[in-house]
Length: 343
Image 1: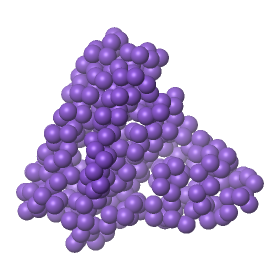
Image 2 (image 1 turned 180 degrees about the vertical axis):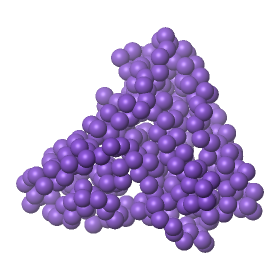
Image 3 (image 1 turned 90 degrees about the horizontal axis):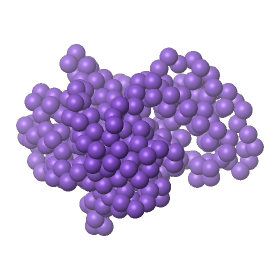
Image 4 (image 1 turned 135 degrees about the horizontal axis):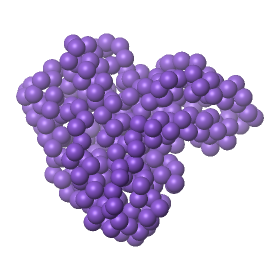
């Protein structure tokens, strides 16, 4: 990922620390203190620019790394302690925002039905409806910038669950992820398809190219996936997250594609969205019944987290979507600063 610009004292200290040699760094008391001050001093972790950027950088060390940062920082013990200091209030904030949905569901079928009911009842902001009917060319470009934070690593956060599952749930996740990664066909990985959409719109497809432009709620949505995926104890939450993601993707992707076509863009731009219209209609059944439902049935102790992970996806993604729509409806940019995104 391209090295981002700092957004406050914590991310400034973090980015400076990551320029050092991890082998020569015995401890990180100043960075740890900065992390503790940051979480103590914020009223809203989910919207805190400094905290969310810092989490983004810390998580990226476990994906493909950050430009100019030594790979050994990924497992540096004191840096992991700093990450944990941020993760605890981050998870607490999500749990405070999103209660566990109440249900008597126990079997795979019953849990799947509860998930379908949960996603069907969601009344969050419809970015897809706005894109389909009202978005300007500039707003379509901003939409892609927001989505690039996740879609350029699409499927990877959910794949953390693979070694933590077994049996029916694991087979289901493998089936879904095999499609996400293009069925082994080079160039068909969904993140590559999204990169093609960016290029067709004259946008930068480099990993992290637009991190500096997106606000904290957009970062928080992807950071939540990393939080769920990287912690084995939260395997229920990441599977529930994926189930809700798939259950709410097919129809919106059709609307996104229609929005781009409305402004004259062709298949080179819409291919990514077109691909998801049919794929996610199939994936939602597998994710709901054979993945999340089967996991909740096989491991009843994670059932609540399966449901909570689904509800958390709807709520946290909704925060990012609501901020985007409010800006557009008020005639403002949804990005942190006005930027020239024209081809």
